[in-house]
Amino acid sequence: MSGFRLGALAAVFSLAALPALAADTPIATATFKSSAQDDIGTADLSEGPEGVLMRVNVEGLTPGWHGIHFHATGDCSDEGFKKSGAHVQHGEKEPHGLLNPEGPDDGDLPNLYVAEDGTGQAEMFSERVTLTGEDDDRAHLLDEDGAAIVIHANADDHMSQPIGGAGDRVACAVIEKVQ
Image 1 (tube, rainbow, N blue to C red):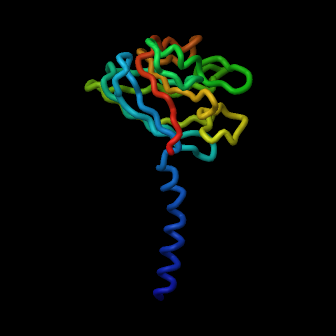
Image 2: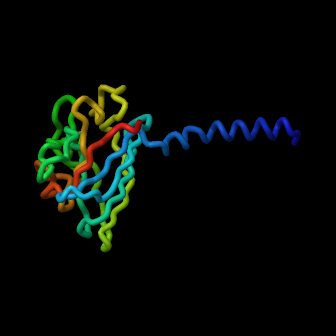
Image 3: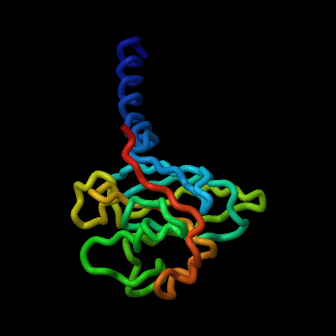
């Protein structure tokens, strides 16, 4: 093969890799705070064509499954993280639960698993939210009052109301746009 053809082929493959590299660059990030306001982990969020991809890394939590949700207000400053509000929502409120035949609501996510050493890592995708605000059919995480990611004490059963039996809020992270 000639040098020109090899160079052209390499250029095509390099351009094809650009979207994959862009997906690894977060648009937003969040730092999880414990109930004692200690930093216990992070989340990186990237906008995809049909929703938001989130990578979570946490430590210092109790082992087992934990409910995790997007909450409507970017405020984790109070005890119990109640200022983060209810789940994010656009339009008419849907019932809670990924397994609920009338749900899910916009803040619902799969559970987070925490290992025996207190660490948890997960990659989650939600087609019901957006970071850019360019889609009015999804809840906007970076709107005027922001949004938070809340981790609960127990697993979410993805069905019962109002929060799937997930219990107390044990960690909270304000979602912030990467500068």
